[in-house]
Length: 118
Image (cartoon, rainbow, N blue to C red; front, top):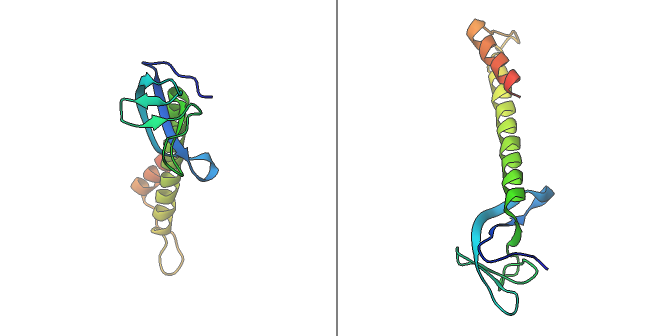
């Protein structure tokens, strides 16, 4: 049973592959009826177990702070992956057809900055 009180800030999401949160959002509990159904100010309704009502693959209620942390960690992971892709692109673009590498001082500084940001 999911525990929440009227006025609490809650998070909701569906977890995808490897536990990555999808369809995440936040809302305040506005009402809990006699059956334990939890109503949010966003219009979403969850059962007493924290599962979205009337959907087959719906959202689940989660602690808002934990969800914020998970979303921040996922964003950091995506940013790091994007930086590595840009670094690889930059390195691949520095090769000539003969296989020699041409990296001037500015490109070297840019590459170092990219590596240091990881």
